[in-house]
Length: 76
Image (tube, rainbow, N blue to C red; front, top):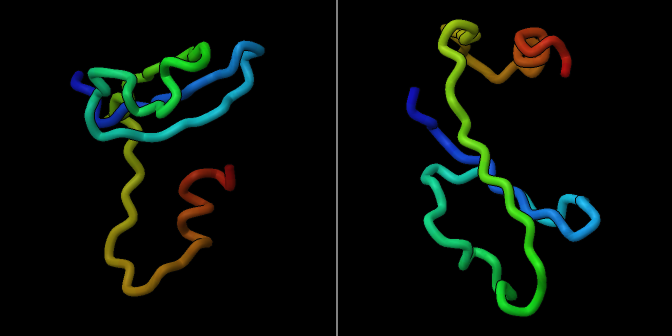
């Protein structure tokens, strides 16, 4: 199945997360970092594939209700 987005994360040399973003297209170059030449970068690019078997749909809602959203995702 084709990814619908990509999670791009940058980690420092100790493994701590420095930066992350969701992108709708796969990055083809790492010029998204301004100081690419000045320091060591560790990147992960994770394709996000939809789980079509476990989709949760909430229909016919006339106003925003955070309780429904919380219940749909188990409060996590």
